[in-house]
Length: 315
Ligand code: AMP
Image (cartoon, rainbow, N blue to C red; front, side):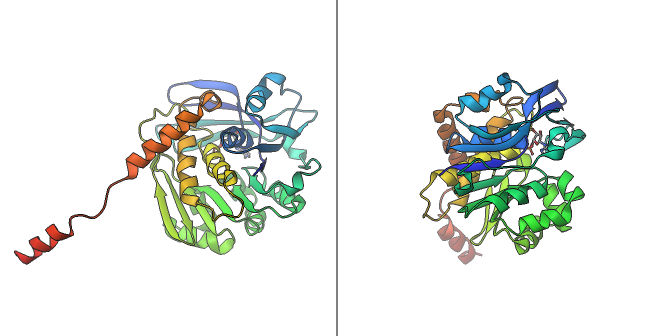
């Protein structure tokens, strides 16, 4: 199945404890679409300004992302600058310039309303809502957001949330959204707002899926050197939804496997700035890391009951 994504395409300026780079290709829809493209066809709806050149389109084209929904308008492209301290899970926003996003009205090219999978990447929840209005009957709908929008437009965000099946969100942000301290309670309060599947991204601690089946925890891959955490969340979403979209439309969605593939894609994303690692990935690297995740979390059957009982009998 194809995936339609609406979100930001951006120039990012990023400072980590080891390096600093300006005007990197970034944005929520950018990281998402490149990661998801390894699994399923992707259609991008976004806006860029006159400062966005052919060079910046190369990674999308290489990955076969359909750009018919990418508007180019007068003005400057969205810009975000952020910084990471010792804790790579905490991005500090230094500056957000909406630029061409301030007047962006997403418009779907003809026929795109029937796209079966919809991902509303991190963007103004009002715009996310307007894309939902334009869709005919998507089978899978998912949304991501961030502290900026939870603080700026909480009521609009809740209205939009009520219309989607899956929410992907950071641990700190779900606390901010719900006011709950424990993440289990935060997930339950969020499910009461609408989405039946809540995926809580916990940075270097992995992710937690909460759905009708209960809880599923997936670790982050421990063996990578984190060069730049930017885009990890969107790449996670790309692996997660890319996998779901690649499966038979009528099958039962396997959110667990999807979360592992989300972690796989996020683990590659953080190994380099911008798209430098992910755009060059080979399919075998993805399956190889999936296997590594299996080894990481496999711990066998409880074959020690007899020993426990013997011990109990001898005391
Ligand atoms: P993440 O995957 O959570 O690290 O998201 C990183 C991307 O989000 C960056 O490449 C930014 O360009 C983008 N971003 C940051 N702030 C915003 C915002 N307020 N709205 C939309 N996108 C944003």
